[in-house]
Structure formats: C-alpha cells, structure tokens
Length: 391
Image (cartoon, helix red, strand yellow):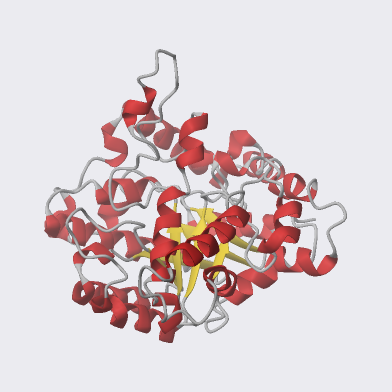
C-alpha cells in the first residue's frame, strides 16, 4: 500500500538533494572550475553527501538494504541526502510510487545556494542554466515530477524573457522567482516586466516563491535582533529557521511581493497568472487577506488604485496558492477563507516535512467537509496549472 491515504493527492513541494558534483556535471566547461564550492565547502555537508552516496550505491546492489530503505522511507533517518531517491532519478521514481501521489513539484536544494553564491555574472548565469538543466534531467525519470526552473528577474526583463525560453525548452512547468528586486534595481511590477508576466501567463506556467529565494542572502529578520543577551540559535548556513523569531519573519518578503503584484495591477492585467507561495507557512494567510483589504480602503483615495476591479483579497483567492507546514491548523484555515488557496505539501525528502505530513494535516481536518479536503489535496494544485496540465 502506498503512503497516500486517498485516491488523488498532488504534492506542491518536494525537493531533490544534489550531489556535490551535480551542478558541475550540467555546467558548460568554461565555468565548472569557477563555481562556488558546494555547501560552502563545509566538511559536515560534504561528509553527509559522501555517506549518502555510499549508502545509495550499497542498496543499489543489495536487495536487503533496498527493502529496508523502502519499508522505512518516510522515517527521519531516511530524509535529507539519505532519502530514497534524494539525488537519483530512477530511485526517486520508486519513492514516488511508494508515496502514491499523482504529481510532484520539485525544487532544488543546496545546489541553488551554490549557484547564487557566484559573484561573477557570467558564472551566475551559467550556474542557473546548469541548475535548470540538471533539474529537468532528474525530473525526466518520472512524468509525475515537474521541475521548478529558476528565473532570475533581477537580470532585467530582456534577460528574463530569454531565460524563460530556455526553461520552456527544458519542459519545466513552473518558475521560481526572487521575492525582492536588488537594491537600486527595478521593481518586478514595473511595466517593463509586463512582457515577462504575459509570456508566463500565456504558457500556463506557475510562478513560485520559496523560502530562501529572496534575491539576497536569506535573512528573515535582521541579525541585530539576536543581540539580545540570550543564547538564541541562529541558522547561518541554510534557509530553515532554527529560532522562533526567524520563523515569524519567514513570510514577510512574500507578502511584500504579493501586495506589490496586486496594488501595482499585475494580477489585474494578467488574470490567468498564478502564483504559489511554497514552504513559507500558511497561518498568516487569513489575516493577510484582511490586511490587504484594509490597506486598499486606507489608500484608495490617497493614491491611484482605480485600476483594480476586485478587492485585493479577491485577487489572492483567484490567483494565489499557498502550502502550509505539517502541523498548522489547516482545517481552520480552509474554513476561514483559504479554501481556494491551500495545497498539500510533503516537502519530501526534507526533514521539515516530518515523517507523517498526512497524519499531521488530518489531525486538524476533523469536521471539515469533503469538498474542502478535495481542494486541499488536489483541486487547488490543479487550478494552479489550469492552463498547463503536465502530469
């Protein structure tokens, strides 16, 4: 029996865990030696990857080890680089069979951090191309997997359009964009970006925001906040917050992005443009809907907002989807205004997804009717790709 507890579940957040030589393998020869070190060259990261590769090779030729990994694949000891199918496409297809979901959006992990660490524009551009090529190759092992290509809007509209063409040629159904423009740069809602949004809409691709993809070094709250006279763990090497204050700051930049897309009229001009906010939690969504509408009421006479034909919250409900964390009260969220917005997400094989995301979601769904459950488990995902069913 698969892990899935119902006939159709579509998973809006999974990852691959790249090998340390993975980006190099897909990079053009002239930039391979110039890429930033994988995992910042940290011994603990390289050791974990090496151990995971060794264990993968061992179970590839040992039926007993393979059976053990498959029987316990959702456990925390088989997560991260040690996850079943973490970096091998064929093995991932088997893991997908065991999970039993109908489709999987797939994001990169450490290779993304490696690529964006480049300071040379040529290396950065080449690294992004390698990242997207590699993700397409990985997802090619199973038609249920849809890779999310990284689209750097910060490079300007013309460069973004060219990069979008490369992403489409790779067959990737979604794009990951940064939440904030670079300091001194052009806002992503500037009319110059309209051809980019128009092309994405016409192609039926989904736009995604994701934790860590902010357009700058990831910092959910300023580091000075932690000069507090207390021992507070501060996560410096990745994007998963290890303290309560950073957790609270996670969705802020995504909220700014969404507010700008609404108030500057992008979602009005492109009503079929759809956005997924991934791995930034969902408990903020209901209050954010109220906050948007209150902002509209407060400023509609002070600035020109006459181009909006809907309430700001209605654009959100029409065009934005959000993945909650396992353990959030999704039953309350679904019945409090987010019924058309929440999507199931396992975060496989990341540890943050826990060893039983379905169980944790289900514990909050008592009394929630079947129509809202269907929206959460598959219909909102289907709506995200209404013009581009790729699975």
